[in-house]
Image (cartoon, rainbow, N blue to C red; front, side):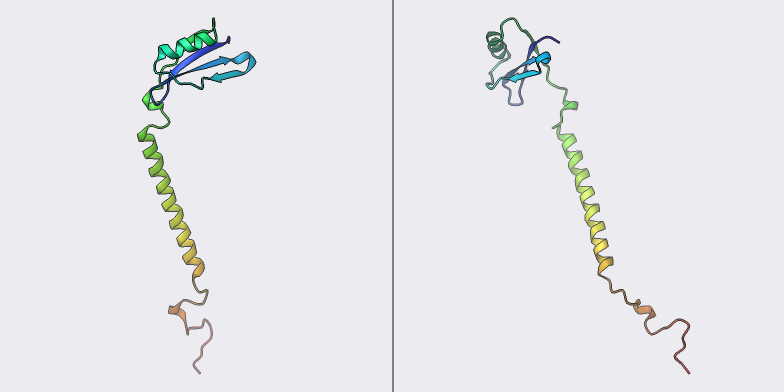
Length: 117
């Protein structure tokens, strides 16, 4: 693929360009942001005359990694797994803390041995 420049809108509403030259493994992102697409396009065209320009569309809301619904699902799942983990950990701690002696209901009773004469 030949060298090309893409420009896109950032999350804050400002624009930035990206120079890409795959054969040379070069990718340069503008350090400056611009108030509009035309300003970003003009700046890129001045720096890289003759290089193809293309606007990148915003990703659909469903594919956005920071979509609120996706974050909420991940947080709920994480909390549920954490609750299960601590519940199991607490249960393992309780079992380990028990006295290995015979249970109270069987104290004083000996199997197979009669203490009565």
